[in-house]
Length: 152
Image 1 (cartoon, one colour):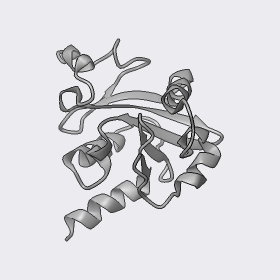
Image 2 (spheres, one colour):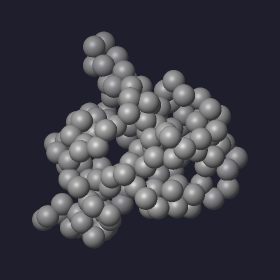
Image 3 (cartoon, one colour):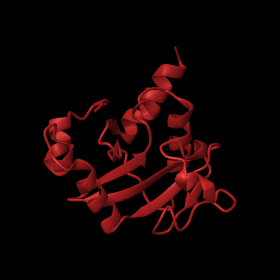
Image 4 (spheres, one colour):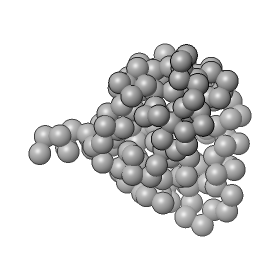
């Protein structure tokens, strides 16, 4: 599990217990939280356009791209995820390979472009994780990572 950004894993686990290093059943817990009452369910096209997946990625893929649902974990270059709020903190779970958002990759820029189009407020302090509990940091951390790595 990756742990990146300004938020230590132990601190994040105070709000989202499934982020603790030794948590058993983490994927099940993430799924239970994000599928319970998500604020937003989304697909992000490779070019960064946002697609509202309403309540289900499988039921509402982008039109003409239904095949991406079965292309795990790359989804034909699309990103998929869910936004949820728990104990007053916002969490964004992105279904992706561990390394996809770890550096200033095209996938990271794709995610940030898509999040900028959200019809709901996204907190600068929102925690971004993968479906495997890789911890990428806050939204601010991701923007910083993008700018630091592109200005060098």
